[in-house]
Length: 284
Ligand SMILES: C[S@@+](CC[C@H](N)C(=O)[O-])C[C@H]1O[C@@H](n2cnc3c(N)ncnc32)[C@H](O)[C@@H]1O
Image (cartoon, rainbow, N blue to C red; front, side, top):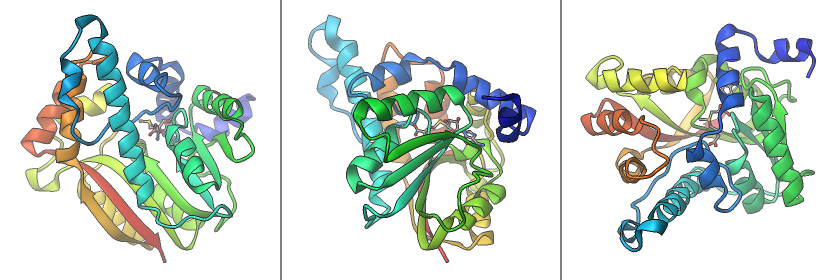
Protein backbone atom coordinates (compact mmCIF):
# COMPACT_ATOMS: atom_id res chain seq x y z
CA UNK A 1 0.00 0.00 0.00
CA UNK A 2 1.46 3.41 -0.96
CA UNK A 3 1.94 6.09 1.67
CA UNK A 4 -0.67 8.24 -0.12
CA UNK A 5 -3.29 5.45 0.03
CA UNK A 6 -2.60 4.84 3.72
CA UNK A 7 -2.85 8.59 4.46
CA UNK A 8 -6.20 8.73 2.62
CA UNK A 9 -7.65 5.91 4.74
CA UNK A 10 -6.05 6.72 8.11
CA UNK A 11 -6.81 10.40 8.55
CA UNK A 12 -5.95 10.98 12.18
CA UNK A 13 -3.37 9.87 14.70
CA UNK A 14 -6.22 8.19 16.57
CA UNK A 15 -7.19 6.12 13.51
CA UNK A 16 -3.52 5.20 13.02
CA UNK A 17 -3.33 3.91 16.59
CA UNK A 18 -6.54 1.85 16.15
CA UNK A 19 -5.20 0.43 12.88
CA UNK A 20 -1.91 -0.43 14.54
CA UNK A 21 -3.73 -2.19 17.40
CA UNK A 22 -5.64 -4.42 14.95
CA UNK A 23 -2.64 -4.95 12.66
CA UNK A 24 -0.67 -6.36 15.58
CA UNK A 25 -3.53 -8.23 17.24
CA UNK A 26 -2.86 -11.98 17.47
CA UNK A 27 -4.90 -12.68 20.55
CA UNK A 28 -5.66 -16.38 21.20
CA UNK A 29 -9.17 -15.39 22.28
CA UNK A 30 -9.77 -14.54 18.62
CA UNK A 31 -7.44 -16.91 16.76
CA UNK A 32 -8.00 -20.14 18.71
CA UNK A 33 -11.77 -19.66 18.55
CA UNK A 34 -11.62 -18.94 14.81
CA UNK A 35 -9.58 -22.10 14.27
CA UNK A 36 -12.60 -24.12 15.46
CA UNK A 37 -14.34 -23.81 12.07
CA UNK A 38 -12.59 -21.03 10.14
CA UNK A 39 -14.99 -18.22 11.10
CA UNK A 40 -12.84 -15.58 12.78
CA UNK A 41 -14.87 -13.26 14.99
CA UNK A 42 -13.82 -10.17 16.93
CA UNK A 43 -16.99 -9.79 18.90
CA UNK A 44 -18.59 -11.31 21.97
CA UNK A 45 -21.12 -14.06 22.41
CA UNK A 46 -24.74 -14.41 23.44
CA UNK A 47 -26.86 -17.16 24.93
CA UNK A 48 -26.43 -19.51 27.83
CA UNK A 49 -23.47 -21.86 27.77
CA UNK A 50 -23.60 -25.61 28.16
CA UNK A 51 -22.50 -26.22 31.79
CA UNK A 52 -21.16 -29.67 30.90
CA UNK A 53 -18.12 -28.09 29.21
CA UNK A 54 -16.77 -27.38 32.70
CA UNK A 55 -17.05 -31.03 33.65
CA UNK A 56 -15.26 -34.05 32.19
CA UNK A 57 -11.53 -34.65 31.68
CA UNK A 58 -9.30 -31.77 32.84
CA UNK A 59 -6.89 -32.04 29.88
CA UNK A 60 -9.63 -31.36 27.30
CA UNK A 61 -11.60 -28.86 29.40
CA UNK A 62 -10.13 -25.74 27.85
CA UNK A 63 -10.77 -27.02 24.33
CA UNK A 64 -14.43 -27.56 25.24
CA UNK A 65 -14.69 -24.03 26.66
CA UNK A 66 -13.13 -22.53 23.52
CA UNK A 67 -15.51 -24.41 21.21
CA UNK A 68 -18.46 -23.31 23.35
CA UNK A 69 -17.38 -19.65 23.36
CA UNK A 70 -17.04 -19.79 19.60
CA UNK A 71 -20.57 -21.19 19.33
CA UNK A 72 -21.88 -18.22 21.37
CA UNK A 73 -19.98 -15.72 19.20
CA UNK A 74 -21.41 -17.28 16.05
CA UNK A 75 -24.89 -17.14 17.64
CA UNK A 76 -24.37 -13.39 18.17
CA UNK A 77 -23.60 -12.86 14.46
CA UNK A 78 -26.60 -15.00 13.51
CA UNK A 79 -28.95 -12.76 15.52
CA UNK A 80 -27.48 -9.68 13.86
CA UNK A 81 -28.08 -11.20 10.39
CA UNK A 82 -31.62 -12.32 11.36
CA UNK A 83 -32.52 -8.61 11.50
CA UNK A 84 -31.90 -8.04 7.80
CA UNK A 85 -35.07 -9.90 6.85
CA UNK A 86 -35.24 -10.84 3.18
CA UNK A 87 -32.02 -10.24 1.29
CA UNK A 88 -31.83 -11.53 -2.28
CA UNK A 89 -28.72 -12.83 -4.08
CA UNK A 90 -28.83 -9.67 -6.23
CA UNK A 91 -28.46 -7.39 -3.17
CA UNK A 92 -25.24 -6.02 -1.76
CA UNK A 93 -24.31 -5.83 1.92
CA UNK A 94 -21.58 -3.87 3.68
CA UNK A 95 -19.76 -5.11 6.78
CA UNK A 96 -18.45 -1.87 8.34
CA UNK A 97 -15.39 -2.55 10.52
CA UNK A 98 -15.24 -6.16 9.32
CA UNK A 99 -12.35 -7.56 11.37
CA UNK A 100 -11.20 -10.92 9.94
CA UNK A 101 -14.51 -11.35 8.11
CA UNK A 102 -16.44 -13.90 10.21
CA UNK A 103 -19.84 -12.18 9.99
CA UNK A 104 -19.35 -11.44 6.25
CA UNK A 105 -18.82 -15.11 5.43
CA UNK A 106 -21.92 -16.04 7.40
CA UNK A 107 -23.91 -13.38 5.49
CA UNK A 108 -22.68 -14.56 2.12
CA UNK A 109 -23.42 -18.19 2.99
CA UNK A 110 -26.92 -17.28 4.16
CA UNK A 111 -28.06 -14.78 1.52
CA UNK A 112 -25.81 -15.71 -1.43
CA UNK A 113 -25.26 -12.02 -2.17
CA UNK A 114 -22.23 -9.79 -2.66
CA UNK A 115 -20.72 -8.82 0.69
CA UNK A 116 -18.06 -6.16 1.03
CA UNK A 117 -16.15 -5.63 4.25
CA UNK A 118 -14.07 -2.59 5.18
CA UNK A 119 -11.46 -2.26 7.88
CA UNK A 120 -8.69 0.21 8.65
CA UNK A 121 -6.41 -2.72 9.43
CA UNK A 122 -4.49 -3.84 6.33
CA UNK A 123 -3.58 -7.12 8.06
CA UNK A 124 -7.23 -7.95 8.72
CA UNK A 125 -8.20 -7.15 5.14
CA UNK A 126 -5.41 -9.38 3.82
CA UNK A 127 -6.40 -12.18 6.22
CA UNK A 128 -10.10 -11.98 5.26
CA UNK A 129 -9.37 -11.89 1.50
CA UNK A 130 -7.15 -14.93 1.94
CA UNK A 131 -10.00 -16.70 3.75
CA UNK A 132 -12.35 -15.77 0.90
CA UNK A 133 -9.97 -17.38 -1.62
CA UNK A 134 -9.65 -20.52 0.52
CA UNK A 135 -13.44 -20.75 0.73
CA UNK A 136 -13.78 -20.23 -3.04
CA UNK A 137 -16.02 -17.15 -2.55
CA UNK A 138 -13.56 -14.37 -3.42
CA UNK A 139 -15.82 -13.20 -6.28
CA UNK A 140 -18.69 -12.58 -3.80
CA UNK A 141 -17.04 -11.72 -0.48
CA UNK A 142 -14.41 -8.97 -0.75
CA UNK A 143 -12.54 -7.01 1.86
CA UNK A 144 -11.13 -3.53 1.46
CA UNK A 145 -8.68 -1.30 3.28
CA UNK A 146 -11.07 1.63 3.60
CA UNK A 147 -12.44 3.95 6.24
CA UNK A 148 -16.12 3.35 7.05
CA UNK A 149 -16.56 7.11 7.54
CA UNK A 150 -15.72 7.66 3.88
CA UNK A 151 -15.85 4.37 1.99
CA UNK A 152 -15.71 5.71 -1.56
CA UNK A 153 -18.42 3.19 -2.56
CA UNK A 154 -21.21 4.29 -4.86
CA UNK A 155 -24.21 6.22 -3.46
CA UNK A 156 -27.28 4.00 -2.92
CA UNK A 157 -25.28 0.83 -3.65
CA UNK A 158 -26.15 -1.11 -0.45
CA UNK A 159 -29.30 -2.95 0.58
CA UNK A 160 -27.95 -3.44 4.09
CA UNK A 161 -25.08 -2.31 6.28
CA UNK A 162 -23.99 -3.57 9.66
CA UNK A 163 -21.55 -2.72 12.42
CA UNK A 164 -20.71 -5.65 14.60
CA UNK A 165 -18.97 -4.04 17.58
CA UNK A 166 -17.19 -1.40 15.54
CA UNK A 167 -19.13 1.83 16.23
CA UNK A 168 -17.11 2.73 19.33
CA UNK A 169 -14.17 3.84 17.18
CA UNK A 170 -15.93 6.61 15.31
CA UNK A 171 -18.19 9.63 15.52
CA UNK A 172 -21.74 8.30 15.07
CA UNK A 173 -23.04 11.38 13.23
CA UNK A 174 -20.30 11.08 10.59
CA UNK A 175 -20.79 7.32 10.39
CA UNK A 176 -24.54 7.40 9.86
CA UNK A 177 -24.24 10.23 7.32
CA UNK A 178 -22.06 7.91 5.23
CA UNK A 179 -24.50 5.00 5.72
CA UNK A 180 -27.43 7.21 4.72
CA UNK A 181 -25.55 7.95 1.50
CA UNK A 182 -24.69 4.29 0.84
CA UNK A 183 -28.07 2.72 1.62
CA UNK A 184 -30.82 2.55 -0.96
CA UNK A 185 -34.28 3.81 0.08
CA UNK A 186 -35.76 1.26 2.52
CA UNK A 187 -32.33 -0.31 3.08
CA UNK A 188 -31.58 -1.61 6.54
CA UNK A 189 -28.88 -0.81 9.06
CA UNK A 190 -28.14 -3.21 11.95
CA UNK A 191 -25.62 -2.87 14.74
CA UNK A 192 -24.65 -4.73 17.87
CA UNK A 193 -22.71 -2.59 20.29
CA UNK A 194 -21.82 -1.90 23.88
CA UNK A 195 -23.02 1.53 25.02
CA UNK A 196 -23.04 3.25 28.36
CA UNK A 197 -26.21 4.04 30.26
CA UNK A 198 -27.31 7.70 30.23
CA UNK A 199 -29.53 7.03 33.25
CA UNK A 200 -26.66 6.10 35.58
CA UNK A 201 -24.70 9.18 34.52
CA UNK A 202 -21.41 9.43 32.62
CA UNK A 203 -18.84 6.76 31.87
CA UNK A 204 -18.41 4.45 34.85
CA UNK A 205 -14.98 3.31 36.01
CA UNK A 206 -15.57 -0.13 34.47
CA UNK A 207 -16.61 1.38 31.12
CA UNK A 208 -13.50 3.62 31.17
CA UNK A 209 -11.34 0.53 31.67
CA UNK A 210 -12.90 -1.09 28.60
CA UNK A 211 -12.23 2.08 26.56
CA UNK A 212 -8.63 2.12 27.68
CA UNK A 213 -8.13 -1.59 26.95
CA UNK A 214 -9.41 -1.38 23.35
CA UNK A 215 -8.37 2.26 22.57
CA UNK A 216 -12.03 3.02 21.88
CA UNK A 217 -14.63 5.56 22.92
CA UNK A 218 -17.85 3.88 24.05
CA UNK A 219 -20.85 6.09 23.26
CA UNK A 220 -23.82 6.78 25.52
CA UNK A 221 -27.01 4.98 24.51
CA UNK A 222 -28.67 8.30 23.60
CA UNK A 223 -26.03 9.14 20.96
CA UNK A 224 -27.13 6.20 18.80
CA UNK A 225 -30.70 7.43 18.54
CA UNK A 226 -29.76 11.08 18.06
CA UNK A 227 -27.33 10.21 15.28
CA UNK A 228 -29.77 7.77 13.60
CA UNK A 229 -32.58 10.34 13.67
CA UNK A 230 -30.27 13.06 12.33
CA UNK A 231 -29.54 10.86 9.33
CA UNK A 232 -33.03 9.57 8.43
CA UNK A 233 -32.38 6.12 9.84
CA UNK A 234 -35.56 5.03 11.62
CA UNK A 235 -35.30 2.31 14.31
CA UNK A 236 -37.55 -0.73 13.82
CA UNK A 237 -36.05 -2.94 16.53
CA UNK A 238 -34.01 -2.25 19.64
CA UNK A 239 -33.06 -5.27 21.75
CA UNK A 240 -31.23 -5.20 25.03
CA UNK A 241 -28.92 -8.25 24.84
CA UNK A 242 -27.17 -7.49 28.14
CA UNK A 243 -28.57 -10.42 30.13
CA UNK A 244 -27.87 -12.72 27.18
CA UNK A 245 -24.18 -11.80 26.96
CA UNK A 246 -23.34 -12.16 30.67
CA UNK A 247 -23.00 -16.00 30.52
CA UNK A 248 -20.42 -15.62 27.72
CA UNK A 249 -18.31 -13.37 29.94
CA UNK A 250 -18.66 -15.74 32.90
CA UNK A 251 -17.44 -18.62 30.76
CA UNK A 252 -14.66 -16.56 29.22
CA UNK A 253 -13.41 -15.62 32.72
CA UNK A 254 -12.91 -19.35 33.38
CA UNK A 255 -10.99 -19.99 30.13
CA UNK A 256 -7.27 -20.03 29.34
CA UNK A 257 -7.85 -17.24 26.77
CA UNK A 258 -9.15 -14.69 29.31
CA UNK A 259 -7.44 -11.34 28.69
CA UNK A 260 -8.14 -9.56 32.00
CA UNK A 261 -10.95 -7.41 30.59
CA UNK A 262 -13.61 -9.92 31.74
CA UNK A 263 -14.05 -8.31 35.19
CA UNK A 264 -14.74 -4.77 33.89
CA UNK A 265 -17.31 -6.18 31.42
CA UNK A 266 -19.05 -8.23 34.10
CA UNK A 267 -19.00 -5.33 36.58
CA UNK A 268 -20.31 -2.81 34.03
CA UNK A 269 -23.13 -5.09 32.89
CA UNK A 270 -24.13 -6.16 36.39
CA UNK A 271 -24.10 -2.64 37.85
CA UNK A 272 -26.20 -1.39 34.91
CA UNK A 273 -23.72 1.21 33.66
CA UNK A 274 -23.31 -0.57 30.32
CA UNK A 275 -25.69 -2.29 27.89
CA UNK A 276 -25.19 -4.70 25.02
CA UNK A 277 -27.65 -3.49 22.40
CA UNK A 278 -28.88 -4.55 18.98
CA UNK A 279 -30.39 -1.75 16.90
CA UNK A 280 -32.04 -2.22 13.52
CA UNK A 281 -33.11 0.85 11.52
CA UNK A 282 -34.46 1.60 8.06
CA UNK A 283 -33.19 4.28 5.74
CA UNK A 284 -35.97 6.61 4.59
C1 LIG B 1 -13.97 -5.18 17.60
S1 LIG B 1 -13.52 -5.31 15.91
C2 LIG B 1 -14.98 -6.01 15.21
C3 LIG B 1 -14.70 -6.77 13.93
C4 LIG B 1 -15.87 -7.45 13.24
N1 LIG B 1 -16.98 -6.56 13.05
C5 LIG B 1 -16.33 -8.69 13.97
O1 LIG B 1 -17.44 -8.72 14.48
O2 LIG B 1 -15.57 -9.67 14.00
C6 LIG B 1 -13.52 -3.62 15.37
C7 LIG B 1 -13.20 -3.41 13.90
O3 LIG B 1 -13.48 -2.06 13.53
C8 LIG B 1 -12.50 -1.65 12.60
N2 LIG B 1 -12.49 -0.18 12.52
C9 LIG B 1 -12.28 0.72 13.51
N3 LIG B 1 -12.38 1.97 13.03
C10 LIG B 1 -12.65 1.87 11.70
C11 LIG B 1 -12.88 2.81 10.65
N4 LIG B 1 -12.84 4.13 10.87
N5 LIG B 1 -13.15 2.32 9.41
C12 LIG B 1 -13.18 0.99 9.17
N6 LIG B 1 -12.98 0.05 10.13
C13 LIG B 1 -12.71 0.49 11.37
C14 LIG B 1 -11.24 -2.28 13.13
O4 LIG B 1 -10.22 -2.29 12.14
C15 LIG B 1 -11.77 -3.67 13.48
O5 LIG B 1 -11.78 -4.47 12.33
